[in-house]
Image 1 (spheres, one colour):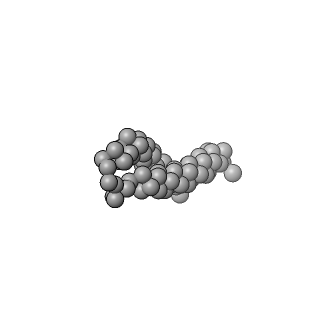
Image 2: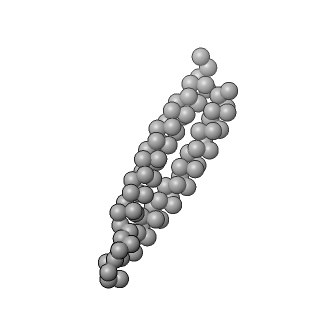
Image 3: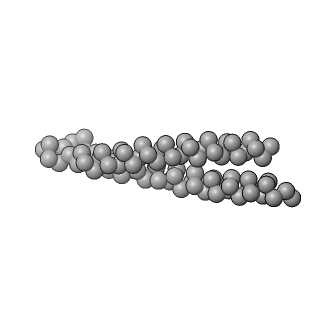
Length: 81
């Protein structure tokens, strides 16, 4: 088997593993954000806006990273055909 094809397959497998990790992280961040938002707050001080903002920024960064990985996977799959 061609060494380049083996390298592409290895990169593809690594990228798919990273995609799975990021997908789990996105789900976890959604859950954390949902748990941090209380629509029934009684006092404005109960709102954890700093925590929610931090989670939202991390979520945005992770989603962007996931998009890049998905594009890389698509390119690698195309190159292997």
